[in-house]
Length: 88
Picture 1: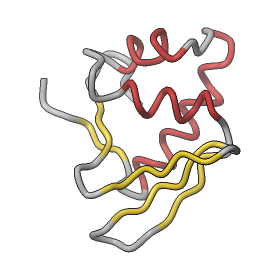
Picture 2: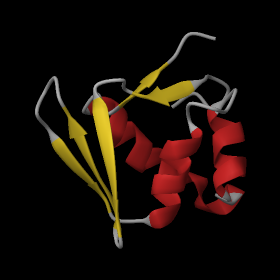
Picture 3: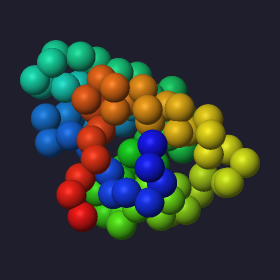
């Protein structure tokens, strides 16, 4: 994941917050993803309004030492088309 690129939640994805995190549903692929972490949900919610992925991490309170774990989760979400790189 390019930390200096802007990302967004796919327009075809619906987010349903839950006590454990959230459910993401992609209407195009009919895939369901579980976010089992409230910080990951906050990070995903910050993607659209942040200029870069690094800025989204900062806004969601993801510390630098924790970023590799969250980036792996975001890579999985990108692989399933839940999030996508947006044009600057």
